[in-house]
Image 1 (cartoon, rainbow, N blue to C red):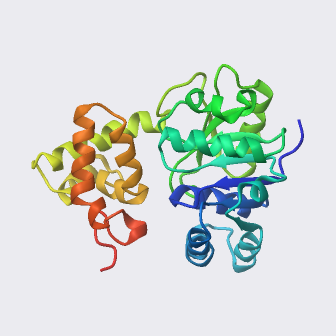
Image 2: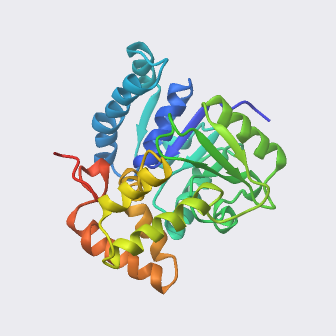
Length: 286
């Protein structure tokens, strides 16, 4: 197995941009791909410079020289073939919709070298649901990151029955190289460890507010006070961004879909998409 030196990250949303920045910060050349030049311009001129500031403020060993070098290692592409031309590993962080992920990996398979390892950052979908579209099921697996990767630095790694053990082990080592703590899954489970715990928790919080029992700020306050947790569920929603929970709810049962419609009507349709947009359950512009 060859060493991993060049990385492509597909998607420059909340997690995609963090994964790309952390990987570049760890010394890897990173090509970021997104569907339009306009989205990439926002990533280049706003998202990544903001991440650079965050690293300077929150990461102990960060200094201006390191973040400048990090930004210099990132290249921007709206053409899959160019982005993936010499990639050793591809990490997908596109919307949590099965069809979109399947189409993304289908295009990537045509563009990437045969040796490229494919990883999905899907938070709920099984890698075996996506792997057939990749054209290389033996080199396909999931590597799921937590939001704020520089702080909550886990990488849940989950293969399928077809995933090569050598590929799995190589991804475990790669996770260590980019500063993550690899959490190895012994078999497939939708939601991995983290979201198997987190999604029901967030769903219960949404049911309380959507049902008119309480307000987001009070649900957050009781959770923080009673458990000592640093964040309440609706603060977590805002950090994640509301589109991902909406997509997860829409893939659930009838009750989950009702919650999705509540989230869409009261927040998403109004442009309240979470902290990154300036407003979600809380107003961050104040």
